[in-house]
Image (cartoon, rainbow, N blue to C red):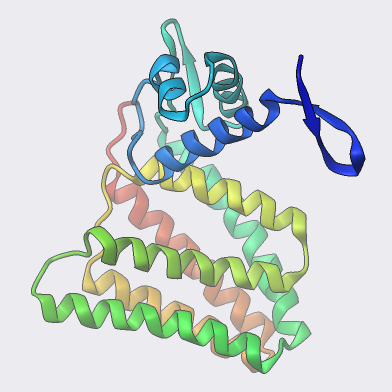
Amino acid sequence: MLKQPGRNGKSLPRNRGALAQAHRHILAQVADGSLPAGAPLSEVALAEQLGVSRTPVREAIGQLVAEGILQKTHRGAVVIEPTRQDIIELYELREAVEVYAIGKVAEARVSARFLESLDALVEAVRESASVLKKSGQKALEGEALQKFIQCDLQFHTLLLQAGGNGRMLKILDSTRLLLRVFTLRRQYHTVKLLNEVYRFHRGVLDAVAAGQRDQAMRLLGEHIRLSLDERLAECVFSN
């Protein structure tokens, strides 16, 4: 098998890059809704899209099955269909990790520059609510929705990064992807919901800036639990 240079001067199989490419490609399609929950995957179609053989695509699918993103069927693999308990457990994991991390961040008293970055993300949520209200639409759609989702995720991610625990961040990255997979079919980001997100994000940020550990942990925990209730209310379960 042909090989290419890897890290530390070692040689790696040439199809290692194709495997990583296929893994990223499938994840991206799942995350943006191109492959919604329940959608079957075609090794042939994916291989053609990427210009690679079916082998790295098959291996990438196997990895994603092991990671809980896909599920094996007698015909191949499909994007996993969630149960109510799946989402509850994922949110419980998210709450346990994020609330612990925010306590560490509040105690550490982060820099003014870092707080400015978080403040910009908080204000972007308020701006999204204002734009939506002026538009007369019932909920965010398209590019505006994606912008809000990115601001929301980045706010939580930056707070986790400030906690300094890389393992926690890795866990939450995986959890957030699964939550997006599970809820892409129905997402209603109304003015009321956006204002609620803004209120919690602003409260959490103000508590962090003031070094109010207990307040930051309480608000973030409440925010995540309310988010769980909303997700469960908007999802339709097949079991």
